[in-house]
Length: 541
Ligand code: PMP
Ligand code: PLP
Image (cartoon, rainbow, N blue to C red):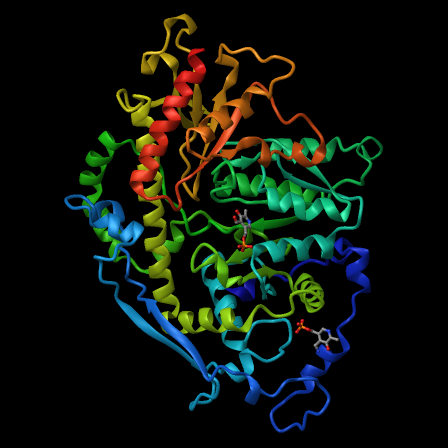
């Protein structure tokens, strides 16, 4: 759809917090709009760039084609994918030079004298253009006057959203399992969490409706929530990915109950596709080799069209605040990302940033901007395509290692359907456990199609151990046993919204988050071996 046919965002000012309504433009920042070329500026307290000790910054950056588009297939006969995946001194990296001078020769080029200077709390103009064009081409918002605003990573972004939209005492909607940092942003402001049930696609629309429809202000001690925090792709910690149909259902509920959606989407480009067990994978790979070859030659448009869509794609009212970050696509230390949202929210978020982070660090901003300028849009998309493929190989490697340890691959491994998605489970019998406990499930998981995590549900109800009053809950005991054996897994209970709402942290099921994003293959493999050994011992007693 062309933007002429789209309508503008609706008026959503009633969502602003009291503090946001009273926030005025910083008087000194307000002067910056008068700072045009030719104006004699004696008003601001700007240090002279002559005293910035850096004459230029830069270095060597990888070229966008550094990693193959189909990493799994590139690996078939050799172990070359290991170099690509995990880095190796034996692999020669192809690099390009990034350079940002303090005083460039050509006008319009990125200049350290301005990027390192005090600026309005927006991005440098080049980055501003890059972010806006990227959101337009990739996320295709469904209203016309969306805008983009830089932030210092999604952590900063979420904090700004909470302060801008929520008053003390309000409740915020979040999935029952949620990224802990997002919860701990909210709580110190005197806000609470309204937990929404999930399934294999993340937040459930029926549960969201149920929470909103049956909201009891008195019992909850808070008005009905008007902000939902959602990580839609490769959710942290569950790895769940929300399809467009579910997003539409959630969006409709949010329209009905006038709720703003914060779409925190750091894993958007780590879309790995469906997990296919190794035996099948070879056959499928052969069958689809030609298709994939054709796909590799496809342009960025096709790549983008085949990704899961953002909430922005269906946001015809401008009630979604999307957050993108360079943390998972360039580096977390860049501390750089952006909002895509309606202009009224963007203006308030900008004012809020003026008194906290201001503009993101000029060093990070200039290096990432110059990288994007040098790679160009097509180059960055090429980089992102390969990145998803790298994580696909990692995901497959971890799941293969885990299922091998429990002999789960033998019969095509998948053992059931949960909310329309295949899940995998390991039963005691499958690895010669005592017959006494029958063929009961020990753990199960839905293979993630995106992100960095496998989320194991441990069926502690099938564990024969009894817990004495003076003992820790089974989940902690098991997690500690695995940790003592030398493997640190993400303990499930730290991701529970009950950690902040005071509900029970432990139930009949335990959960572990296993990251496949960083470890070397042999470490993942031996980690799964250790995990399997401890699990067996634990369930045997
Ligand atoms: N406090 C005072 C008194 C200042 O004058 C300034 C800069 N003009 C600041 C804080 C802002 O400091 P920073 O750049 O470290 O955020
Ligand atoms: N949001 C989610 C859901 C995350 O998983 C993470 C990182 O782990 C972040 C935000 C942090 O992002 P940033 O580095 O951009 O602050």
